[in-house]
Image (cartoon, rainbow, N blue to C red; front, side, top):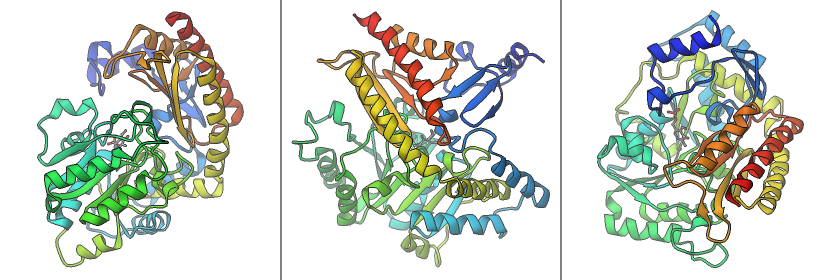
Amino acid sequence: MDSKEVIQQNRDYTLFSWSVQSQANPIHIAGGKGAYFFDGDGNHWLDFSSQLININVGHQHPKVLEAIKKQVDELCFAAPAFASKPRGELGKRLAEVTGLAKSFFTLGGSEANENAIKIARLYTGRDKIITRYRSYHGATMGSMTASGDPRRWAVEPGIPGVVRAFDPYCYRCPFGKQPDWCHRECVSHIEEIIQMEGPHTIAAILVEGITGSNGLLVPPDDYYPKLRALCDKYGILLIDDEVMSGFGRTGTYLATQHYGIQPDIVTCAKGLTSGYMPLGAVIVSEKIAQHFENTMLWGGLTYSSHPVSCAAAIANLDVYEEERIFDNVNSLGHHLGQRLEAMKAKFDCVGDVRYIGLFSVIELVRNKETREPLAPFNGSSPEMQKLAAYLKSKYIYAFVRFNMVWVCPPLVISQEDLDKGLDVYEEALALVDDLIK
Ligand code: PLP
């Protein structure tokens, strides 16, 4: 079968996510190595999206492949009521790296958030969840409702009890302030929401560690300590969705570890196995774990704590440690930040750049003074389409959404490859500058 036939069969018999099916335009991915994937025609693509910000240790890491094969030979499946070696070992490792106590395993991030919401409700006996508008927490009914992003519109009214707040989006502050002279209204208005909703009704505040697919909103340093204090004041749980920002993407296991706070619940997936096997986790604090010692945890999934997924996660964590991957993220992250700042200074179309580790975005504008976005919220524009097409024509695979383009390569990328990709981004930005002159 050649690539054209593979694509045709995919289109004839499968449905593509988030797509008008007749417009889906998939690349046939046939292999990969490190920061590159290969298409069916033999082209090598530099993967600046890490396959949905996921494949942290790069494509086809031999150590993770070996662990999967070994576990397949030993035991492919165990129902969730059974104990298994990889399940316990992974639980222990996650407690160590997060400072939390116990893990409930799921198949991915949406299910992790779904179960985190349920656990928070069971633990507190309260039902409301506060989330933020510029957020994405998944595509199952509960996690999609919890998202603030327009993707949630498809399931509305969704599950009851979700209340939304504004984000720490300093470039376009919803309160018209600047971080050096604001009063952190992005936190204080949440207290007002809590009071209006009734503190006794609110189970949890659910936030992405660092907002990912809604534009990499790196909060001011005191945002999380203030949010933590607010949760403590009202007995509300803090759920930290680290599905995208966790496991090395920002140079630490959890993005919130940069801010010195401890969430009550962490949800994760993606970088937990680098996508080699489907796995997510809800990791809970000691007090929440204790609660379920004497009361029922209402919930379960046939594939929870799948032994092959757990074995892949353990090997993936070993790779992070043994190959000192987070050191690479921190040093390359510094370099990436410098290059992004230089782009902001150089190109008229670059309004803002936001970055932490190898998690970054370029926000494009039509006019630097007015900050008019280069594409409308929840839409696109000919300029953004041209930018995306240019990157594709040079075999750079990037995540482009609204007026933003992300730079999120696998964490094992070399500086040479990072620079190679960024040089092409610069060519694309020069093209856009010409278009908006
Ligand atoms: N939470 C965040 C922050 C995400 O970015 C995503 C997916 O991109 C999810 C949850 C959903 O995870 P999954 O697609 O594994 O269900």
